[in-house]
Structure formats: structure tokens, C-alpha cells
Amino acid sequence: MSNVPLTSLQEFEEFISVFPKLKQDIIDTLVEKKINQEIIDWVGLSIDVNPIGGKYMRGLSVLNTIKDFKGVEQLDEETIFLGRVAGWCIEFLQASLLIADDIMDGGIMRRDRPCWHHYPNPLIKNLNGVEQPIGKIAVNDAFIMESCIYILLKKYFREKPYYTKMLELYHEISHNTFLGQLFDTSACHSLKGDFSSFNLKNYFQIARFKTSYYTFYTPVALGMLMCGINYLDPQYDAMKELLLEIGEYMTAQDDYLDCYGLPENIGKVGSDIEENKLSFLICQALNYATPEQIEELKKNYGIDNPENVKVVKKIYNDLGMKEIYRKYEDSQYIDFIKRIENMDDKVPKIVFIRLVNRCYKRNR
Image (cartoon, rainbow, N blue to C red; front, top):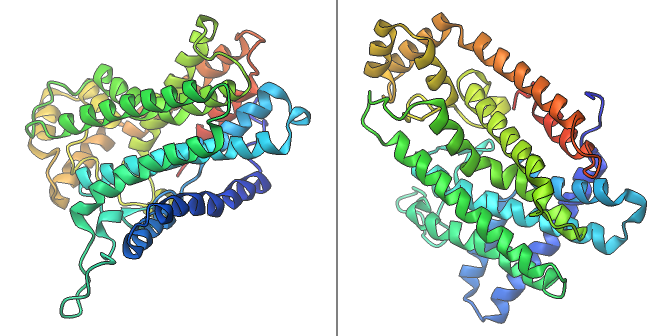
């Protein structure tokens, strides 16, 4: 199953080609409201920066799902276009989440460029030649980014029979993701050295709510909805669970790459150790560490200092965390493939194979 093709360059470029039109749709609504031009320019800049530059896995998955359920030969131009619009709406949700996440985490870089709250404030002139950052105003930009979703849904889907269910899905997924973000943030703001909540059960719950729902479940649910399929039917419960577990799998990969990945590949400098993150690696380390190593982790984990980080990484290496992770990555992949092979034929297996293959052994 490993030879199932991922998204082609042509599909990628065609997805990107829709973006300027959607940006203009949003700008047009601001013009209609007679918003000050400086504010329109600000929103335009935010749209140019924040949804752009990722892998677009979420957005591309909507149309891929439609193709897999309906068959490419059954799709007209409108369906293809709407699949891309729905996909971009997920990318706008992703953008709003990343703005907020970077503020809460004190992020510096995102996708090889400054986080949005570090961008120069376009409304403030340089003071003594020093640019002023956007700063906390970025919180409001996260809200605006999310609101763009509903502008686009209203414009392109309000006459569709599934419009209400689509709105409900976006609201539900946003709510789940916000809860996951809260859980994640509250965990990393616990007292340094307090590992009482650092376990895999809590870890996977955070991953499920913060990432799985909007990254894997939503694109497939949207695609099914646009094909006239009730994704909430109990017969699809196993499918939903599989998608959520794939999201947990990807989150564990992100945590591994945060520690061991190259900044030029992942687009940022890893900081989970410094930020006291409830991560896959620290949870696994606590399962394997000796009492003495746990004491060292308590003294050094969550401290933003290179020497403390060095101590934590040495313990990770002594425990063989790379090998522990590789075994997890391989065993989960095998489990996913077996479950996909045993799925009901009513669901195209390629939907899930493509997603699993996109994650397996990735380095960015």
C-alpha cells in the first residue's frame, strides 16, 4: 500500500490558484462595509501571510476525499472548485490557531518567517528607525482569520442542502480544537518539575482535541458531506476513530521532530523542552527513566536555558528515545494498515492510506 500516490504538483498548484479569488472575496466584504483602507490593508496583509506557506495537507484532503468517494470522472468544475474552497476554509482555521498558539507559546519563527505577532505593525511608523511589532493585536487577527471561514461559506455554500451541517461541523471542530489548546497550555504552565499530569493518556487527549479533529477528521467529514453522505452515521464510527488516531500519531511525530528534526526542515526551532510541553518524548522518558533520571528531568525540564536543555536531551539519548519513537512509529503504521484493510468496502480505503502514507517517516 505504500505506493499509493500523494497529492500531485498539479493538484497542489491548482489548490493554490484559488487563493487570490478567496482573498478578494473577503476584501470585497470589507469594502462593502466601508472599512478604513488602512484596516483593509492590514487584513489583506494578514491573509497574505498567515494561511500561506504550509503543506496544505488539510485543505487538499477535502477534494481528495470527494474524488475518492465519487470518482474523478463524476466531478464537474463546480464540485472541484467548491472542494478547494472548503479546503481553504480549514486552512484559514489553521491560520487562526497558529497565530494564537504562537502568542501563547512565545513563538519566534513559523514556516521560516517571523510569527505574526513579531511582524512590523503596518499602522505604526518606525520609532528612531526601529520597527514596532504587531504584538498583542495579533490576538484580534486570529479572530478575524477565523471569521473569514464564515464569509466564504456563506458566499459559496448557503444554497447547498448541506450548508447548515457544514456550519455545525466547523463550529464543533473549532470548539474541540480550542479545548485542546486550553488543555495543552494549562499543562505546560504547570509548576516546573511537576510531572503529575505528564502521562500518555493526557497526551493523546490533547493531541486528539488540539490536532486530530481539524487536521484529519474534518477534511474527510467535509468531503463526505459534500458527496451527500451522512458522516455522523454510526456505521462510520470506526472510520472516525481511525482518523483521530492518525492525528495522535502525527502529533507524536511533531514532538519527535521538535527535538530531533532540522530547523530548515520543520520551519522553526524546536522548543518543547524549554516550554515545559507535555510532549510524547517526555511522557515516554518518564516511563523508562530511573528515579535518578526523573529527578534530573524535574530539575531541568521546562527551563529556557541551553545547559538545562542539554541535560534533558542527554537523558533522552541515554534512554534511547530515538529507538523508542521509531518502534512506536513503525508499530502504529502496521496497525493502521491492518485496520484499513479490514474496513467496510463502503468507505474507499485510499482515503486513509493516503493520509497514513503522508505521515509515515516524514521529516518535516
